[in-house]
Image (tube, rainbow, N blue to C red; front, side, top):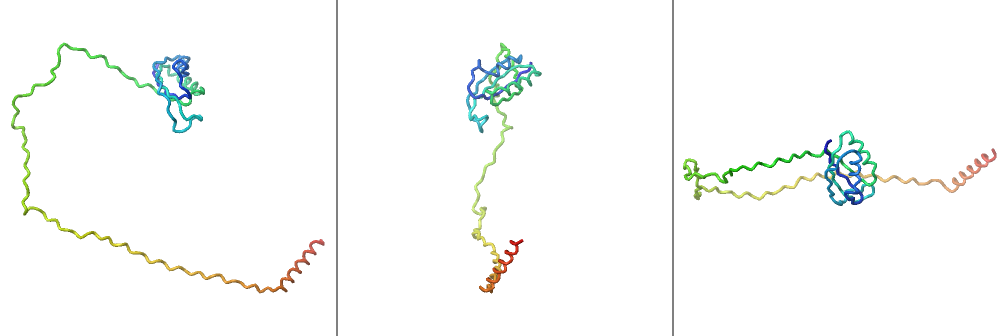
Length: 190
């Protein structure tokens, strides 16, 4: 059997005895090793219309062949909003160290005399004379020249549309209406 770790989210806080995942592990032929309740936390976005959920982590052992069936059964449970199964990291606990009768020395012995050959002298810094000082010339303040402005393009003048004067008179209008009436009468007779 291999060790796996599952972290799942439920709507309500489930006790260890009511844990649907632990019951499913045992019914699938696995063994629950450790259950850790992480508490209620808010979601970044709603999951199945819920805004908060209870997180629980469980370490268990199960046969690798039965893991797919176990995962399918968890997906059908309504009380589990989300879950993630990973292989549990293998942690090796080191064996306790043997205690020997001899205690190692806490400090190494320091030699009484320090050899002078290894001492490096640091150079001394001499102050500068007035003659050696460098004069800094004052530079005139930087004056920014404005960027040249492009001349504006002349606008094209648009001539207004000429207004067409109506030359029709009342007589012409009357004649036109009479002609339309005649055509209408002809169409109605047909």
